[in-house]
Image (cartoon, rainbow over all chains, first blue to last red; front, side, top):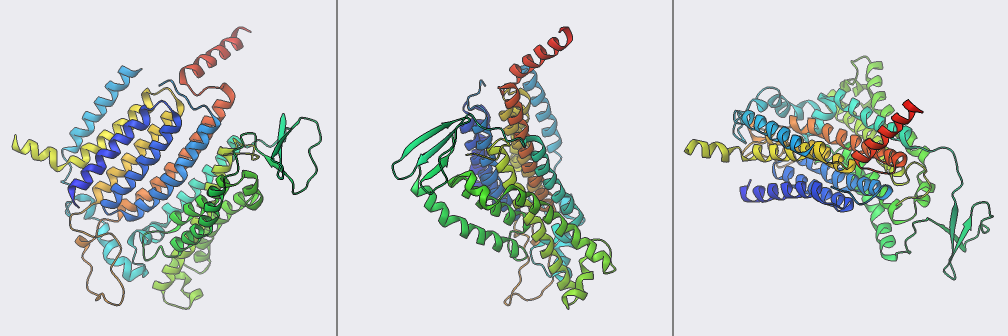
Length: 81
Length: 276
Length: 138
């Protein structure tokens, strides 16, 4: 496909991934992980894997993020690193 | 710990990078991954199973055993969560909160005292209560039925467009989770109780395994859908398409029930009384 | 020099995938919070799925849904026209397994918090050491 779009999405995926593990607030990390999931789904749709992208969109943005937020709600929100 | 981690990570990265130099260039049709078995699937799936979506045909028919065991994996994840977190003993909480709806006064009843009488004026609220939000509740009431309809469409239309059992099951589960988030968890438990969720988990796996046993009873191998032709009054090719639909329905039911059960357990940390 | 440059550029997808895998691996090893480790595990899983999808892509090929309908003639299907569907099938299973392990891992994390009141690896280890030394000496 158009390699410029693919390159930009790959870069955003990398930045979201690094940010999700460096942020000190666990709720922010959960939301960033949801964004990372959705950008991965876009990347797979660009590469032609439409079934896999559909599954990742519903699972990553729908269920994974909600489970993380529920777990952060039941435990603590701050983290030392 | 951190310097050791960085060294390990760089070492692994260098090893993988050295291995990646031998890979075929990206997008090569003659790459080794694309020349052995997949041309057979691409060329023959429409004529043998009458399902245009090659991924669904391979997933549910040619590699049906993998999908059966994957359904069992997700079922055991739901059961594992049940065993890990479920608190069965009903300990009375330290205090319960009630809200008098006409006047807006919040009551707090300590342990051991009698709660207010059951009437439409008193509403039990969670300890982490947020004010009633009209926008969230109305919007989710509009979205939930349409998203369930879309999920059923995705399951049924998995033969012709991207979709199938998993995607539809996850969207169905997510619609019930949306309802539980927008209203109370107790309201959602009243409509879709835990017993029903666990029962549906098991029902989905039974439907999938039962289709295989049905094929065996009709004389063919396990999960050989061509044998269902005697039931559907067609030829073997259309029977394979119907067999794929049956197992996709089973997979969708299990995935929906497990997603809902995971949310119930995690959001209330096993007690199933209040939640997000 | 020229072929080194083409080597790097033509396989840029693979380098990015390897970088993502290493980000996930680093988070699993070096971070002390349990939820961050779980996030690192998921990043590693999705990076591996990206790698498989990258292998199955083909230039100038369409998605693996056969053209059908009243306006398409029944000509022979050429395998070179369609993207390889086999990695997609395997990765559907991988995504479902990833979400199952995520659910069980978060349940374990909540149970650990219930018992030790902390999600930090070092605090839990020091509490465990205090518990076992109590059992040994007491």
